[in-house]
Length: 329
Image (cartoon, rainbow, N blue to C red; front, side, top):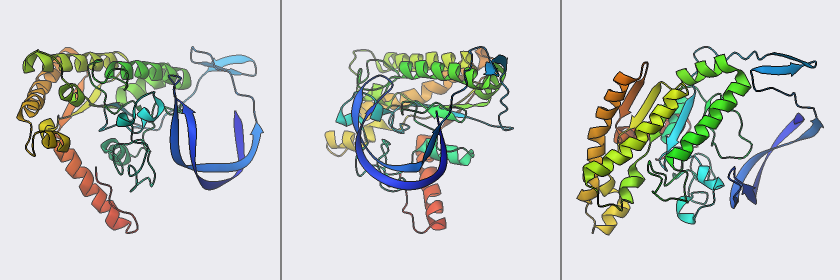
């Protein structure tokens, strides 16, 4: 561990090789805010796994009090929510956004977000009084009291969707379980339980499953598989203390620009139909689960309205800070 003294801040631009948590190595371009300082080594304090820490050779209880009404944000999903997790996995160019012109408005450099600016979770965090929620796979990120973002561009609720190239929902849940364990070790069982129960869990998943569908199953059967895996994920989070969930509606997938290009400038009605079916069935399933699991609360929201709201908020921020350009999602 290093203690920093008399730090000065400078910007650097560099191309580096970074190693993700899965051991893969990728090239990463970044404009980095660097602290130039005098470094003094200190000996890290040992901490045991049972909510005790070492002090003068004696184990004492961990005392960690979160701010009153503190609410963390845990994010799962695909490219709509991915802040750059795919920067740190062994994948292909198609599933990364760490190059220009991505990120050119708000961040002024590519972060790995599939946007020229911020994503919806970034705005939600801002309105909640939180900093930008950190990327789980970014090396060195081990503080999770504000939450963490597990989303991966191209991910689906089904493991088969872009398998081997993305972090699927099942793996994102495995990462969340590691975070839950880390929180208990960091702040103690009582505070971790409180944090996880107060937190909001925002999940946007399923679009890639429908867009890469390769199954003879009917629309109803296929949507049932996707929603079934989403239900499993929700219940796993619930077991770890999660109680408050947000689910944006599925967008009209058949009207995405590249889908329209494939269909000769018109929407693909077949793909849009299953997206609409997803939006009809999801609230039914969530209402059923809400009656089964004590304390569970969920909120559905229209994806289009979220995007419109984000753009309007961007315009408001732009008017307040005339030197910044608008960040369109």
